[in-house]
Image (cartoon, rainbow, N blue to C red; front, top):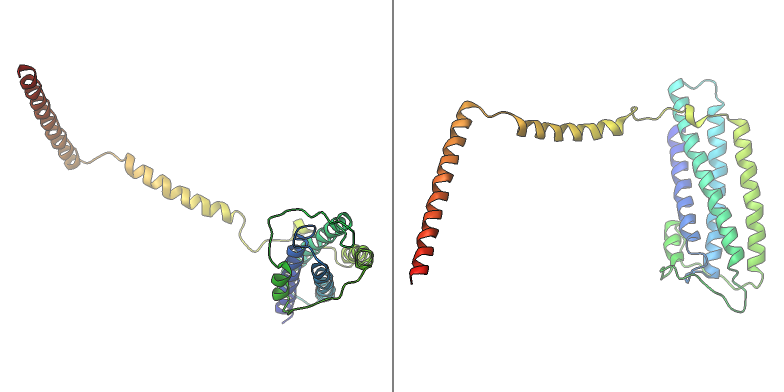
Length: 242
């Protein structure tokens, strides 16, 4: 149950992190709005809640001395996936901070980037987060307050990642993959072998019966070619005579 619960929680974190990245891609574009900024705030905080839950669960399981080696290897693999998701979330949060500083909402004239994105990006994210038709009232200080909150949340995320490394020391390069080493190469090699097999079949020497049939076909083709030349010569002579 612990492993399945961890997988479910990690899957939820990955989905929310992907949702947040989708929202960040609309910052500074023609789809940017106060609703988008509010959705981003709710999404990243949901991601941080899931990250804290994942950290607590995985830390407890990895510190358990009674689990088997196979279970520990699986939890370490999930830990590596979890830390990768955390790193992606941090990158996107820093990116949203930079773009938010360059493209504030409450200015007399706003210059947006024409990204080609049209329509309601918030609707897509809200559907992914099971949120419906959220509306927000305008706040003159939304830019300043949100950016300050974002800076504080990035600092908290950095602290969480440091604590993770201190509590559980799992080297990513020491975690074994579930697939066999070189599985992708083997699949590629199988395709290559099939191609080689086709080539080898084409290069095989013909048998005695096949040689005689090929000889007959060559003689027949030569006769047809000779007849065609004779007919062409006769027609050419008649044209010249007339």
